[in-house]
Image (cartoon, rainbow over all chains, first blue to last red):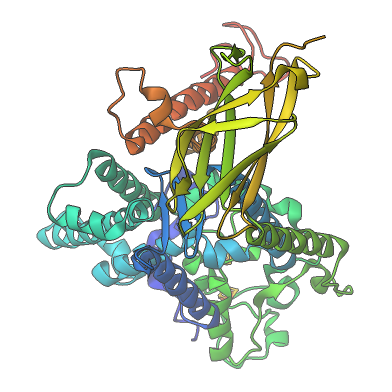
Length: 471
Length: 95
Ligand code: SF4
Ligand code: SF4
């Protein structure tokens, strides 16, 4: 690339590269990039979106492999079933995710933003569609400036139609995580969607369309909480994307192979390609900025320029503050180690506690209407409602027993307690005690429930027995 | 203050945090309470869980939006009409 290559659209668009203008909502036209990091991002986009769009279609046994069945209040994740009682795991998972984010941010800066954030990923797809329909950056700018014509109308309508279809499909898949997706697909085709499903498909679709089609970098700048606080996690050894000022300045266009020293120029040819590719519209040469999402598009494009100029690559590159100041770099800092240790111990804890989880839930509620009743035989009776949930994948028959008061008698209407997988049952239990055995007005009794086919599946609950004390 | 903040940012500053918190509140609330249990005694007994979650979410969002709006409202400088703001020389009616 020589001096006459600067993109002419830049001259036309004049000051849309001024760093301050994005705040006034001017539309950005990020130029498409090719190169190593762009390929990484494409791989990231395809892998993540592939997962997102495909996962709900997989089956596990006779049900959907991953289904957050809100109507039934059960979460299925492959072989595991989670209940509202398992909420603690979700909390755990969120904490682990946050720690992972801290860990990677401290090490490698905004890796998440550039390659994995849904906002980046979906925006990337929307940009592809835009490029497909309207052509490259300069064509898009020209089209937007041109007065309305049939061609413009046609191109704009096609673009938005494609965006809307893609968004709606995205919304459909989203809802497919919460209601069985094959049935959802059938009712979509048959036009018999339930009102709530339809609503969420549109709502999520609208959010996708708005965020990836219109808001784009504004989401990163104004809406993203992570973008606001990520700088707290940065230190002088965090990987950032930076322009090498010492090497690049003074900037200026030049003929190829001139003697730079004589011309008094640095390596930057001032082609402004790095600004044109930037999805957030900043000039990385102004230094580290809050808006930079670390997408590395400017690295790719500048490396290209350097190669064509026969200069060394890496005028813009991944680096650290310490490396730039020729100080010693340190990858394993205290905070990195602390994040890693806490994160991995939490993951281990989560895996362990899930593997030790007992798929049986027992709740005991004392009858609120009467404290106690005396039977004709002179026994004291308390009534309880037991709520049982079989959270296992197979049917179980359970044994109920209780300890705490001598000579307790348990009376159930049912002869046997059999629960199908996922079944919830309420049972009424009468407990009768000879009052001579009562030492206190209120005595704790320990109920235990144990599976007959697998004695490891058992659980205990304490209930209160109330009765008169005979002195 | 105010006028140098872009409008999108103002709208987002109200709608977005309230959206996030409404989401968290919805999850916590419906994990603890099953809508089918507490709707039976109301005229909405026929509503599906999905419907209850949706309505619940938007009610939460309404509340949190109100809270965000109040926060933004009270963030305006405290000055009377015509009064000079302490040192900042922002005049009375703060837009
Ligand atoms: S830093 Fe690289 S891409 Fe940017 S203007 Fe200079 S030479 Fe061009
Ligand atoms: S400055 Fe470079 S890395 Fe940062 S957002 Fe812009 S193009 Fe991406």
